Image 1 (cartoon, rainbow, N blue to C red):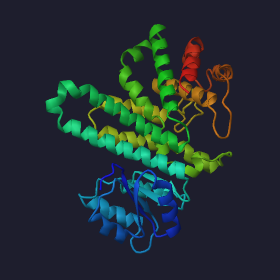
Image 2 (image 1 turned 180 degrees about the horizontal axis):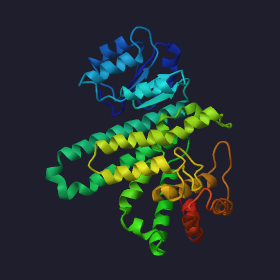
Image 3 (image 1 turned 90 degrees about the horizontal axis):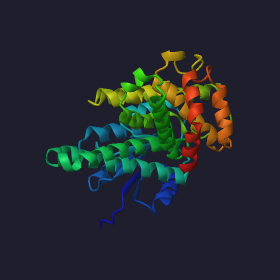
Image 4 (image 1 turned 180 degrees about the vertical axis):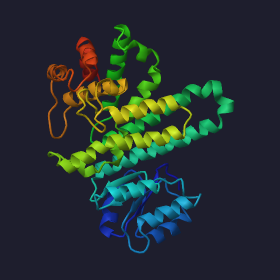
Length: 358
């Protein structure tokens, strides 16, 4: 009987994990617990789930073998797979992602985190199917549906970005706030003729869409590091820094597969340069001064301001006045001095945005 609920296969050889997982998910989804890859494929002959939670380490057929078989069959290739693993191993995670997994969740898992990650991925899958439907029928719906397709594209971008932010236990309002900070800077640059040659050649709509993906590379960072309440070790900080280069790699692949190259190029610049510093002491490439693209210099201010005023599990947020003082102090060292002076003129807009978008 179709109850309208999504169906999830939970595949794990450990009965305790199956029991805990089903208890966490049963209130929201139809959950089938399966203790091996072989049982899963037998079940797939009768039922196609909306998502599969697949343990990596299982006797007989492990998770990697199972996902290869799933993706090789056109009947099951479309089913999203999230790997479950007890190991924090970057190489293993990258291997799984390259085989077609959409995410990794570390065991033992938090029930709220598991539910939220599943909810986000199922929403993305629904929107992907809707977008595909619209694209396939675009000839008949050009006038009526163009706006809907654009809104759907924006919704997918926002959902992807929120999924990344949820890994870091930051709400999606960080994405919206940084968008609005970037818009405030763009408006101020136009009104004050700052970097007018560069700004005049930019597509503001694409900039505001693409800046949502500045942290997309965090999807590859282990939860144990992103959620760590204590200071990071030097090795862990190096892994955090890698989110910039991984983000660039992800967006570069998008760029190769889309005709909307301006959007992808803007997104790539935001991802790879938003942690560079004016004095050359940033990462990942140690770019200095105007060698840092303008979009990266803008996002550096927007991202740092939001980090300063936002509370996290390991710190309280600063007041607007304190955050402004810190950014102004970073003029010519952390931040572009021209943009810092512009920020000083419009910081009241940042304060309003931060207060309005909670």
